[in-house]
Length: 466
Ligand code: HEM
View 1 (cartoon, rainbow, N blue to C red):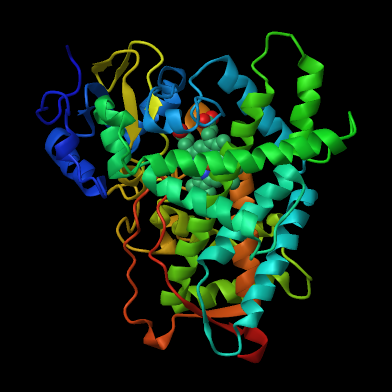
View 2: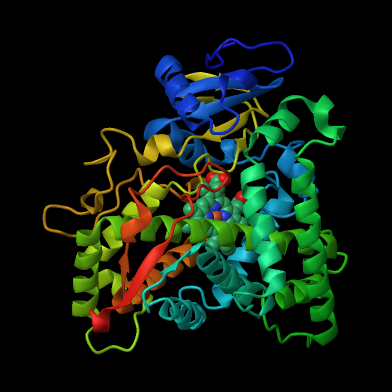
């Protein structure tokens, strides 16, 4: 009663056939036009409510944050990750303790301080080396490079080590992550969630379980190695901190455990890899195809950095145009289009509707990031969306690629630092060119939990030689 309306459902499968199995984003938009900003869907027999537009999104995840901060359980992604970790943990002790621990440890390891900047700059040097090798005139496919760079930064934090870009182990992990990001929002996972009877069949969703197991075995080895070499009270990285915490807490009834640790670090590694790298990939795709925007960034970077040997995160405050461009890249990239599904933690109300406890909540972030009335140019790539009349950087409320409220991305600080330092350092040194023989660029993203641009090639020139 008083539940949001939605398209008619079929027995057992619910609204499975109302959504394209390959990319439901257009269907979600079509249903919004028919049923309004808050409407319902049934994934099998499970009720879900889709949120669209800033007003509904804010009321749910910010104003009534705690009511909407749960995570649905018993879905494909929960089964693959064995109901452990932090991303999919339901609202409660385990989530709270592990979220707090991650935020605190990331801060202690220098997030917002110079040491994290050092780590990012160290990694950028390897990216620069890779790019330099292709300045002789050839083209380069940046996918693996950006994925490995983002993965290495989070590996440094978690395990205190980085991997060469051609290292077999990291290639396997990154490939598993990338594949799982597509499988988890793909047609087979949708079938798994809608029709539980199919779960035991040898269907392609099995690949998701296999990929996860591969990563788990690798993480297990890293934990073993750390346990052997760690000195209590002198943590080298995130993993050591957790092991220290386990010693400290022993039997205090907390949710910390060694089994959780494996899934926890995989969660952080996964969340920190595909997201940042796909945003960078989208960024460079646009920068190559909007050369005047690239040049204006370079002018501002040169002017602000002058003789400085490298950029610091602080410099963003003197670079309103670059800031606007990076935010515009994130707005257009819409890297996590449906956020991570939420779930109501109690009976509640939203925009006058009644939403019972346990209802799945799907945030259509695209509907906010491109909402008419919130942006000067909602449907085009235009940094003016983040600049006022005086050319100062402004961030509209509708900018929420990291979501908002109690479940807001806990890596936002790290991601923002990475995006700024990568874009500024690489644009300062190189000119990025869309290859003449590449044809017209295709900006249509490939859908998944994280969206990525279609694979592309780039041409790179050293700016000093331009
Ligand atoms: C451009 C990069 C990134 C984007 C666009 C992004 C976006 C998001 C979004 C939309 C969510 C879901 C929030 C919600 O459920 O309301 C999320 C959650 C999360 N992100 Fe990120 N993220 C990025 C980078 C990172 C990085 C670098 C880390 C690594 C530390 C990270 C760790 C997490 C975690 C652990 C969660 C789950 C939080 C929770 O459930 O409490 N993310 N992110």
